[in-house]
Amino acid sequence: MINRDDMLELTRRMTLSRTSITRIAGCYVDRDGDFEGSFNTNFLKLSQPERAKKLELAKAIPFSATNVNLKDYEFPQSVQKPGSMWQLLMAMKECGLKNDALMDTFYDTVMESYHSDSGYAILVYHDCYDIPAKASDKERLWESESVFEYLICAVCPLVSEYEPGKPECGFLFPAFVDGYGEPGRINVFQEDVKRPHGELLDILGLGR
Image (cartoon, rainbow, N blue to C red):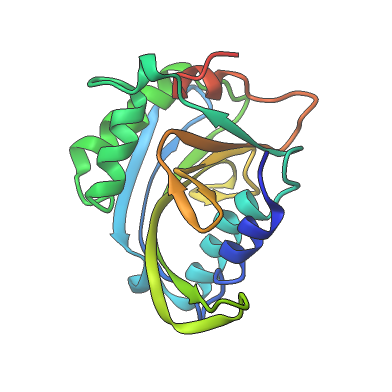
């Protein structure tokens, strides 16, 4: 189960003045499922209006209803191995999205299985959250205790050319539990729980 407070701790920092997102990468796919181009840039190099738009899309994942739209999954030990999606996500996180070959592999894997009636964008964010230390009375201290490095992926329908709308599905990896990252777990988001993109679980190697 996901602790709502953990998610709120992350989303409170997803504002223009407080964000620690370092990088955003993504690609565009047309309604026929064909690749339409990609980008990979330092998040702070986006214009302020564009940063605000992209922050809202990223925030939609952890800010969604916990244990309803956003659910916790464990990667089976059998998929935590070389050549797996789990290994690819770990590598993407560790390089801070700066390896275009890894990103292309990720996009290709998603595109091979993702089902959409319209064009869509695959957006991936990299963030490094300095987790504040807590005193014995659980009050926050100023100094950082540890760093939570993670990815958010949002798959969004295109509302116009190269303009992504509200995410249909996505994930936060690794899961954030009690102030620490759990690399063996992932939080998966589905906007429509009655008609979820179950293929996302297949893509991630989680099964259904």
